[in-house]
Length: 484
Image (spheres, rainbow, N blue to C red):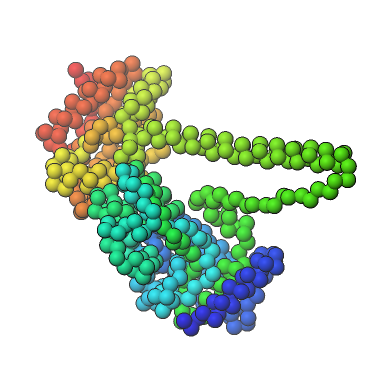
């Protein structure tokens, strides 16, 4: 590998900085040669390729911008080097790797080093490390490493470093390579594979983000990925510049960036053993009191941490108890309670409450044609699609089966109607898993003060059943005070 000498030199430099306790170097203090300064001053934008769906570490958001952990680090490095970054949009990680190989992008902000990638990339020292785990169905038994998957199917996202590791060390495994981590997780949900291989924080993010509550961290591997910056290996000056920036960033800044996206718990072991010299009963007694005081403070600090974690866990469990097990949105019981509260709120204000009830059209046939596993995935995708398009002041939940309810307190009727029309259009134009296209029938209903909750929902449900028989796929308004 032609760059190995430089890389080893930089690693040694990093070690010396750390061992020597050197203070962190700021942008103005970075030492560049005249050639490097001229290069950075005259260089155009640095083209960046990322994994477009690898949150919380990196992604391309709806506005087409680079976001996540690597985006924040790259902004800091660019500021230190005085350069501009230009995102090269891609559809998946495999495409990003291809563009890097073809020199269509200069930098991959977060990548693990391998001999194959070293053919076209140089690498900085790692600045993020994380474990790789196995994701399985909730009902699966715990997997004790990759060896326990012999005779089973494993999913690894195409182009990920795991693939190379598994091919080299576990050639006996039956592996498929979906185009993304999300597709790998879907393969587990459908029962097409026993497990998917993923980095722990990204797996947890995707499972929570897409409401995949039927999945769990079902096993461990002995594999860790060490992520640094990959730079095209025909641009040595750009490599040395980024290497200096990575080595110079402060530990405080690094922790600050990471804490924006996920929490890292660091425990340090310290040796507080004290050599006590018996010079008298008084000194022994004083040492005992000091030790007991220290132990008490340490215990109280640990107890406070445990209580804080328990409180956080309880809050999370309380939130989970309100959620539908499949889609992650509010379930029927919670929506009943919210509806009752919203009706009381509107009654106290003397204002009507607008609600939106919608059913997916032909969903029973979809389950028959594609199976319930695919049907479940469609419900999950549809829930995320709706959530992303709703304002913050509404409540959205699963009313039952393929029926969903949206409560719109303090929302004018015309706004509720426009919201329903936009949601109906979004569902109809979206391509769900297996390239499935759906439509939904919507009823926008106005509830008036002092109306009974059960009566309101009975009328709305009756109306939507009529519509699904007569003209499915439409958006209809009704005033519940006029229903009999």
